[in-house]
Length: 436
Image (cartoon, rainbow, N blue to C red; front, side):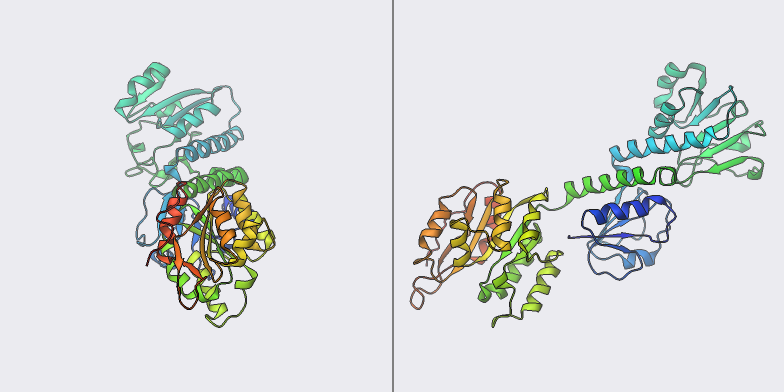
């Protein structure tokens, strides 16, 4: 996985535990904010969490932070902040859970037949609340002129603008995240009246000039997390996934075979590729052993660092790649003659061959960046076979040393990325054969 999941282990919000499990079930590793982990993270900030400068300094570069605030301070330039409340589908679904939870609270207290309720604000949360309080007599207090006529046509004399007869209502609910309601101006209020604030800070009441203790005022943060933690976590998880699918880079499988002499040249090319594509690395058995060209452990460490993903070395692991929805194709680079021969003859006995097969069966292209000493001899017919097959595309190649190795060919490493871009459009980059 490119990301790990980061969460606040000390949180009392029920969503956090449920959300952690959802990510773990999808193969993510999970770490508390305080745990050491240098991998990029998907951070979840529950409502009303305090964000300090120390928190932002400890967020790993390249991470994505999801929260409820529309704006945050001290955001580092190399960290992305995403407000869940900018996703319309999340807002609707979260408001529905908030309304259901609030109705449970109210039903535990009010059992009389004179059920009158005043909603302050006429936004999306109020719309969700209205749906679950249809058996009550509903009134609306509105502060926006553009909704005045609409509300009057629907609620008649029960639609108020800027002020209302607050003493008439046993239950008052605010949904406005701005202190526009001033109890100091109320002529009276009911002794058994309860005021609920469902808005975000700074909430909807201006308590200046009045003794707040005379009012039964309750701030109710995070109702979905308290009453419906699992359902609320699913809503958050799906919102995060929608963002990732829309904003993350397309993904490719990079298959590395045993042409060890090319490994040192591969790394700088990979640095460029990961700027455009998310990469899942697959390393064949012959590329997963010590060699005389590079230190194998250092080489693999660099692959993990550049891609942000663990290296796949098993056939079973490669086969599961086909379930990743945003995978666009595979790149075999460098591709040995042995691998090319097996691809041409339908042999699937390594993780690299399985990765290519798993994507080809879903009609995903395979880019071949060959590096083989027998391209113009024993493997010429196999290269020709793949050139003639659908969904195979070659990085332009030519002889690398025609005098000392007349049958040897190697691809142009600098054209790997352009070849990928063309292959994903269904086009073979030209010219295919390199001149002198």
